[in-house]
Length: 112
Length: 113
Image 1: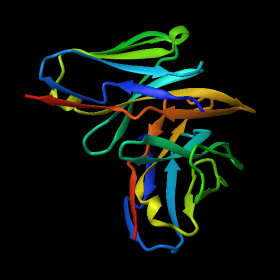
Image 2: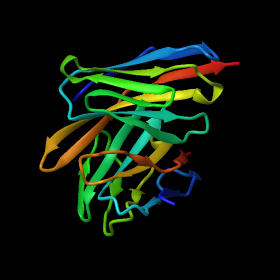
Image 3: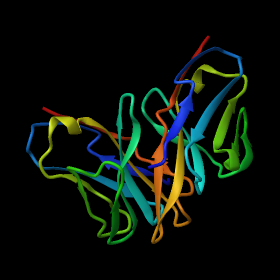
């Protein structure tokens, strides 16, 4: 199956710093999503981004599908950004079926 | 309010005792799925459903069953739970166009003794 690799696995930031999280995938995909899991376990969709660049406040994401990677940018980080960031890729598997494969995540800790 | 609900949120059970984790969504989504999350392994898809009465295996379906008799509900059934099924389980739903934005339930933490 498709492999999804995220880096770095762990990241500690001082509040106010910027960061870039990376997601590499091993095969062509139909779509890609970024999720944030907060320290209480809740999973929130951040971006649905098959290609190009999207921005939402301090967060933005870029996917270069032809080179099989995506980047998530966090600017002016806040303590509420802490948690685990997951990249997930979607691949069409035939007969109307789509399967979603997650990376293992980047654990971000933002300290005051 | 658009949401995905799961019950129970926490469950401790013993090996072999059948259990069901319910999942319900109020967004009229066609696609629903179940994931398990384990330390160091991220989220892995167990089963998914494209519509009523249409289900398919994900990456780790062994030991699980699902059913989709109604559009809003997608229960996960463990016929004979084992300790290696101790995990955090998430249900998710999305619209018909591929997976689009996934909405996740709050999670069910299951411990099998």
